[in-house]
Image 1 (cartoon, rainbow, N blue to C red):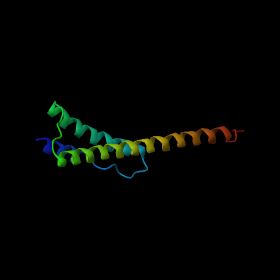
Image 2: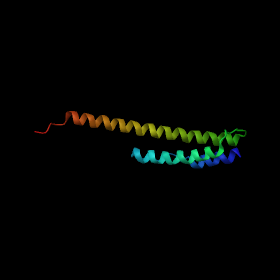
Image 3: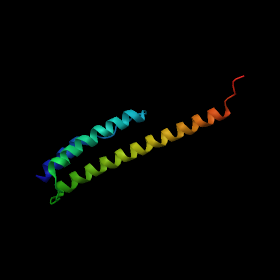
Image 4: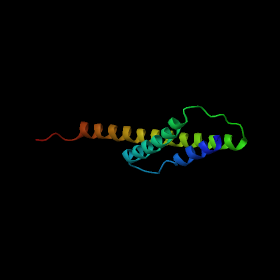
Length: 97
């Protein structure tokens, strides 16, 4: 049973898309997290990893989760740089006559 649950979680956890638009990335993340949460809610219990295959599947689920966290952090940083740039542009923009 653990193997099947891990396979379902893995299937629900796509790799993060390579997108420049943070909002589209966030929408994709929310879709992934909603699908994963539905599986976990259905379970209601923890998983006992007893075989090498189950441990490998769990490692892949965690690796994909880490990839999502990295993609979201990069998107957050891009938004921060964009906001800083806009603030600087406003500060140095000529005032209207």
